[in-house]
Image 1: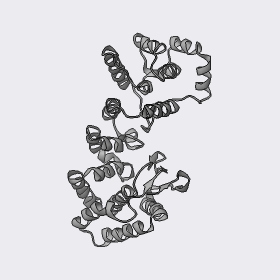
Image 2 (image 1 turned 90 degrees about the vertical axis):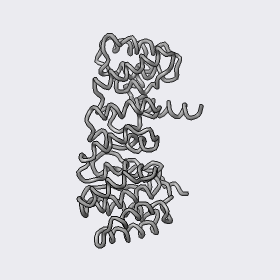
Image 3 (image 1 turned 45 degrees about the vertical axis):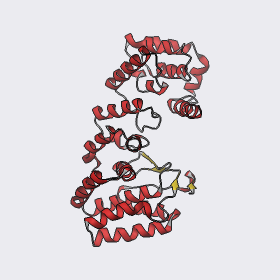
Image 4 (image 1 turned 90 degrees about the horizontal axis):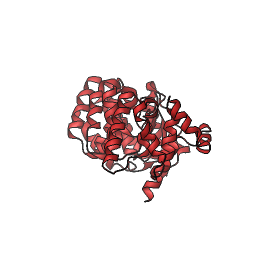
Length: 304
């Protein structure tokens, strides 16, 4: 399989031209697969049947060229980032088929979309959740997204939670907080959650702090990324948690504690930050950030 470099995919999606943009992208790297999609597009628009649509959706992974793998970022039509990093082309192909039907007949789309969720195998289910940012009226699918968050199937959770702008843009605080906690429980990277900083809230911070206390009481560690949504909501009686991290031997704990101090409104924690001028300068210069810490932490963890 080929990997297409990030530089080769400068596609900008816009809502009024979305399906054309997706097809143009696929055509660049797999003309035979794009031709197959064009044929299905014509059928969906001119001679639609549910049976043929379901068959095309299922067949999408078996067409020549559909197994190619993207390594790219897809700038989204909503000014958020939809990442196609490590996507097979057939996932975007399935999203194309869904989008064509959604644009052509919303009533038939609603019926088909529901049925697909009921019958989909794993890779099809991943494509369905990955499609949410591309759909017209995406706010209609909040309950469906919340259902995906509750799953114990790793690839499905990743499809909705990792590099997907849909949750941050559309989910209320309840399911959003549940998504973040699920990422902690299943040991997945925070730095790949789109909109995490923007959607941080006090209730989430309290949940994460309580989780950290429970883990520490049991003699276990917590990911240093856990503190990313916490810093600016840190309560006075919980400041000791960050101060403990300053003397912890766990990798990246010191940096995480000081990033939280930087985010905090606490004068006490701001004073703590001043005691580490080298790291403080890195934070100010943005050479140390939550994103860089997350990336370094997960690279280190994957090498162990």
